[in-house]
Length: 254
Length: 254
Image 1 (cartoon, rainbow over the protein chains, first blue to last red):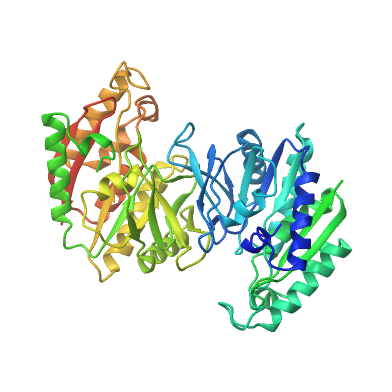
Image 2 (cartoon, rainbow over the protein chains, first blue to last red; image 1 turned 90 degrees about the vertical axis):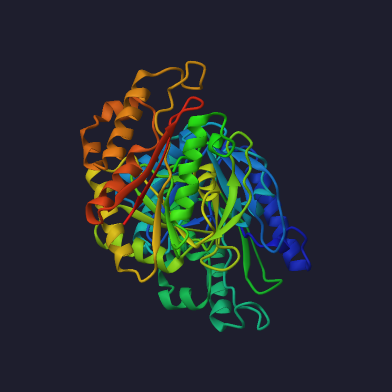
């Protein structure tokens, strides 16, 4: 799911089509008991992934003044299992709590990276996970595999949400100007998604990822790790680029 | 420095005396260019220390409704040096950013653990560091030593603030009831501080630390590491326990 403000009030047909896919994701995930949400705009650590253990997830930071108030609860049982398993498997990961270990003061701030996807999803307990750009591709994929093992063992129905936007250099008047690699990366990623062949992410050179100015690649590797262990069908996919950054929505189901 | 609300409006003479020491700390640190603030009520990770790299430090969470609005800036140059050096020395530490790597969206939430000490200090750029209870005593002391090396090398004048409260079981009507170990721990810690012999912290058994319900021990070990490398004189010390938890203020200067 993307996390750009335009999906909330689509300014054109393509973005409207993308928003429709996001609503379908919401419908598809209606039976889920909990969500696992991987977001690139929460805590950012150079070389560790994070699993938020704080009890209450509280809206804190909107983008360009778009405030989306709300509070969600962490599925602490599931969060603990994911953290413990990942740690036991040697993944560089930390558990993240804030202020107090439990109770009303155990809180965690949310940004647009989580809040925008959550607008399309019924409220459920969730586990917030943060990726990292400084760990190897193999480690991110391995984390996805480990995550899938934990989710598969759990008696609950759990939906996984990957929050991601793609190239940020689509508009010469945008904050990053026009960067041809953004188009190239977005085209490739949409091809990979529609073919449901995420192993092809490994064909994308580091340099292209860097130049294309994306915040999607690392979470997509986690998704690749999940899909390796638990193959799913791709049901929906849409792309739009109403401003300077590319947004994609896609739904996989068992 | 303590982080309990009562120091803001002292209800008795002992707390007033403690608040006076806190004001003296503020005066003593007036010439500092930057602060390093170690707080137990920000991010809490089981087995990693944290160095906040986010640019803007924003008031977020008061205790018992005591809101203390304000915004501080991170000394990112110093924060980066501390993180890099600690990592190079093999300390389990992560760098913490939020939402964006820099600019207006690179923000970090503050709790009462930071906000109360900051009320007594003139505004300066600061580096926020989080301790961890799951790393060894030796690692915490070693981190203090490494920290002191970075601070000593820096051309800036830097003041270190350890935010800490002590036993939380001083009142049978308090949230944790009456726990005799809280009194024992607090007495010991005040003795150690007044004698300026922080190496004696290592004499305190793990069990006493645990039973006394403190949030001070781990940061005090960091302070011990600092004082091992950079001996300082103790100038002021005061203790008060107006409610259920013990608070201490102490000032060390070169």
